[in-house]
Amino acid sequence: MRVDALGELLGLSRTRISPDALAETGELLERIGERRRLSLDHTVVALAGATGSGKSTLFNALAGAELSRTGVRRPTTARPIACAWQPERAAGLLDRLGIAPQDRFARRGTALPGERGRDLDRGLDADRGFDADRGFDPDRAYGEDGVEGGPADASGADAASASVGAGAASGGAASGGAADLDGLVLIDLPDHDSAATSHRDHVDRLLGLVDVVVWVLDPEKYADAALHERYLRPLSGHADVTVLVLNQIDRLPGDSADLVLDDLRRLLDEDGLAVGEHGEDGAVVLAASALTGEGIADLRAVLAQLVADRAAAGLRLAADMDRTASRLHPLYVGEGGAGLTDAAREEFVDRLADAVGAAGAGQAAERDWAAAAEEACGTPWGRLFGDRAATGAGSPGRANRTGGAVLPGAARTPDGTGAPRPRPSASLSAPSASRPVVDEAVRGVVADAGRGLPAPWAQAVRDAARRGGDGLPEALDGAAARTVPGPPERPRWWSAAGGAQWLLMALAVAGAVCLISVAMGSLDLTWWLPVVMIAIGGLGGPALAGACRIAARGPARRYGQAAERRLRDAAADCGRARVLEPLAAELMRYREVREQYAVVAGAGAGVPGRSSHAALSPR
Image (cartoon, rainbow, N blue to C red; front, side, top):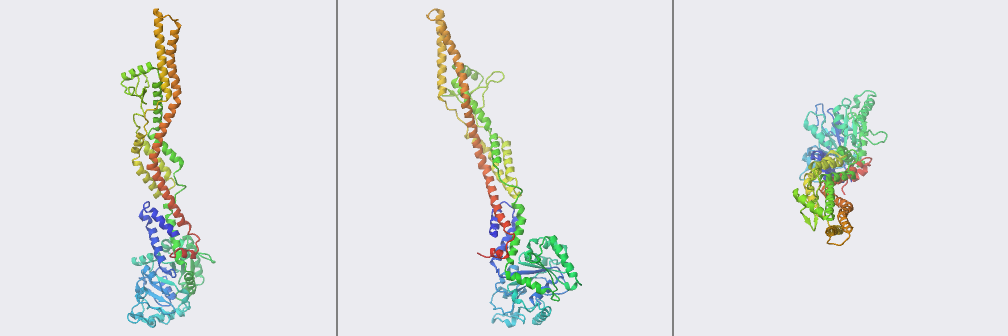
């Protein structure tokens, strides 16, 4: 499950995180896939150590034959040497490790049933028991101890027999217990501190591929800074698949070996490498002497337990997963919560509304509606004088009428001199979005969305917002143009008020004619009646216009609010489509990778060894 989650994690991250940052993770997935396809019944154990630590001697003691050359000249081991116990199906592992055919050996108590063309047999020539015509001859291939092949730097079977005899004399390490190690693939690595660069390259490559590492230390170099800083400290999470052997204890007098072991444990604690004591999980620390055979049986027992559990491969890869998860932590986990809050969305929409002048457009629409109502409900002579004044001032707005009502924006507003001037109208021109305000809105929402995100994902959020924000001002302009309100619809009461104004004006005119006729004596009528008619007609018109202005305030306000809302909604739609939705998509992707990362990082602690083995088995 963790492996699948890691694959999903890489797939979701490749376009957001640099390839260099994910290169090691991709290599880990490849290693896991390769190890899954190969035999999980074998446990690959590497002996690693510094020059002169005696790891080749220890390798020979475990193998029961002088397979890896030893000597005083340094470095002695130039290429990795492999010895496989019950080597069936181990050839693929050795190919993966890059062990040369001539450096492969088999160790077991029964003869190998030689299969022509097997990878393991390619390192055996006719002199070592494989004949192209007769097939595999166990009598030619094995000595008395059952070791396939010959010693790495000895001549013939005599050297092998001599080595076996020496091993048997040294605590019986060479003779019994071979069956306990069935499934073990033991690798003798070159020196990790070798002066030859190719030797160190071999070590670094193979340490990343083997299941278990046995560090062979000597009393002189066990505290070497290069060993602890370059290998033990970075691999502190691999304690369950790490064994440390203090070799050459025969050189230490008295209880000095215990003192050195205590100091070694102290250094390992400083490295963060947990030491397993009293049955606890952790690295195993042993003291041994490959020369005298002391401690070899203990090391063999540790290796036999690892081989019998068949869990080392799973434990190693699980530790690699934990290490990778720790390294990827800064790329996938930020500080605090991440996400786009509702408050940030509202603030972004408010800023876009300000950018297109939604509030101002709403106020202008409100004024236009009120002006249209005033034109429709005002006194006829007021409209007549207003038209003349507007025409004299060069205003085109008053001359544009529709059905007796002036279009919105045609109302004049007296300035300080009393001269009329044209009023900006939402119906005649669309507002243009303010670029600085739009840019500020985008920066603000990006800052909120990227808060708490790891650096790569914060950059992805910025890039998504930048791509959408580049054309946002033009999109806002187009949306604003589509929401420009037309002339307000004429309510019925406008027509009624306009008709009443004409009746009042007719009444006033009739009263004036009657009064003139009474004054000239041509009409026999009491004088006060024409005066009342003139008063009602002359004063009723302005009074009706004032009442209509008061009555128009509510509808005008609602009309302006509707215009503001339409423009605000249009700006919000543009902002959502071009900025908020891409940001939400990036944040959704980040949430997905966080979930996958949680699986990768959260399932590693405390996983039993056999469970790890099962998780790595092919389905």
